[in-house]
Amino acid sequence: MVIVTLQRDKCIGCNYCVEMAPGQFQMSKKDGKSVLLKSVNAKGFYTLKSADHTIVENCELAQKACPVHIIAVKTT
Image (cartoon, rainbow, N blue to C red; front, top):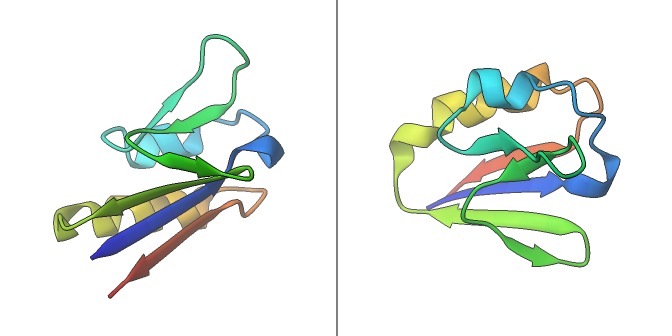
């Protein structure tokens, strides 16, 4: 299982996550912040749980590229 978490409230809209993992992230046209696709919101933490381990590499690149460190990637 791959678990990706985004603290969307702290997003500065730099777009790096979308460049690194376009299949999991996109930018909101409404407020210019990142959106973690297919995620569930719990108190400002958007979480995606996926059995698809092919997304790990791109999500980890997005995590490393994020200048405000609001992306977390865990594998189980």
